[in-house]
Image 1 (cartoon, rainbow, N blue to C red):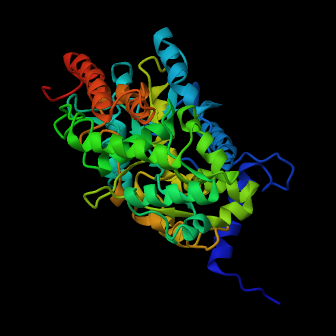
Image 2: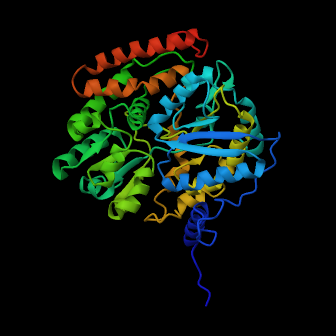
Image 3: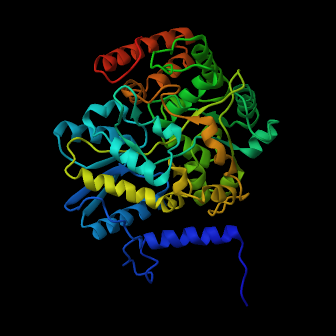
Length: 462
């Protein structure tokens, strides 16, 4: 008897088969497989030698299990010895900085956020960008603005994917608080979050520490209130009534619905607390949810997602949670192989998205035709199956770190030195008023912009 399977089941089995192949289990289960049977396109130039890749350890372990043999198999086909080193995303900046200072190290380095302040030490990848567009069509604007410097007219990096940053909330907790569909505005986040903390003794979690998620939360709040670090012409605009109102809102959220732990978080803290049932809401990618599916299914089934929370003007914006960006340092010994590998990755991006369990969405939408189908009918057992469907239009409420301008070198330094989370924390703790905290941060930001403007890497005049 032939068993009929649903499309959802077909997609799930396809995903599992891909993962099995990546671990060698697709070759008789003996672990002897190459990791992929993908045929590499002929490179545009003869390749040889070594290609050393350094990248962050993906939040979804399945991705790295697939990626390493995928890269090494490509190398065998084109005559390049490929090695891949993974380290925690928080360690990438220091490691890259030390290699750049030494003038030697990896040929290809992947960051999870735009390292735009490194531009002077990085190769211009405009030729790679042009080739990628010619093969795969237009790149998402938020991804282009994350690596292109209009001042120098260079692509200092290459963005191949991105991860949206929706609200992750516990549906039953918010239902009990009278908001069955979760908070849609910051006022609802405050009112519902305070009610949940009072009645259910569960806090909400927006970080205010020196880590990735706190950086994203601060920017989302400022943008949704109408503020920004810079304008479209790269002039500093941080000190505004809109930014001050956003900082005041973060202080109110802390006093009403959060705990002191948010000041000492690392990038995993909100994930871990949500999975443990200790938070009612976080701003994050779907990685916490994927971990909960494996470690605490009851919590996973109760997690729902919402788009960017709206500010007083009725609009909401979120920063892309992760922008995986490859850079090729000036010291790279094999830049041709690095570029050709990136093009090979793009040609196989359905596998990349699948093996990230839909965490990493394509920067070039045409590379993954199945994205919409997978989000509508999650092959990784979401309940309900369309739990991730809201991510299909995530680009409409997501933007780049430098919004409304580009992610220039000054924006990169503001990001990497955590100016905005520190500003939020000082006001929330009562060390400074919102006005004082914003004014202090503005002094820091202006000094950073002046430095990079004098180096010819940032536009604007103030």
